Image (cartoon, rainbow, N blue to C red):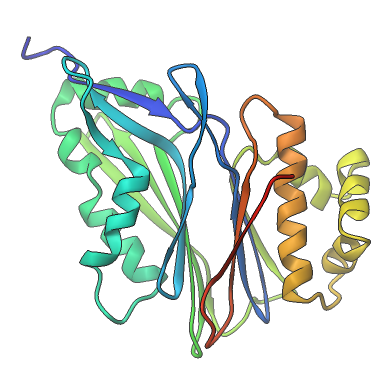
Length: 261
């Protein structure tokens, strides 16, 4: 029994995370569809933590095989992060917390477990992906934390990627996505129906954005919503509403909206 797998994991099947950053603020959105052992459910993959937002894609639930008891639920874990964070909060603080204290570190200590989860990450190259945004008077930050298994080194590893860290994006906007992104990438590439659907859904504001013109944060929010909706229509079994969108602005509380289409 010592070598038997102790845990059963469930995936966030087909999650789409998408973020756009302009000079005025950060918009992060996520779909809500998950798959628990073949049963479709809803899960809020976006969590507000003071002046920051964290969104997740990847493993959502881990249960003990013998008892079925849940030992990890990402929504419950994300909700508790704030109690362990310092008062001065930014995206880097949250990213470092995930890297050092994520529950996977404890759960995957045994070689057999690491090997099992290593095989599970083959299709994506990782186990779970976190997108973290924060904003203050001084700077905007958009970071990614990716957790994977390195069997050769017999350890869990995480990498932190900085997509933005400064007063404003280097160009007119910065975009980052995770999970199902094919249709969104087609749209931003100006390709076919995806591009046309984004033009219609945003009253032409999408064209203004990609051509470098000024768009408001409300318009940016609608572009993110339409982009995730586009992915959901292309992947209805794995990406679905409600689409939760968070908007971050300097000196203002994080605003969150939920959309059913």
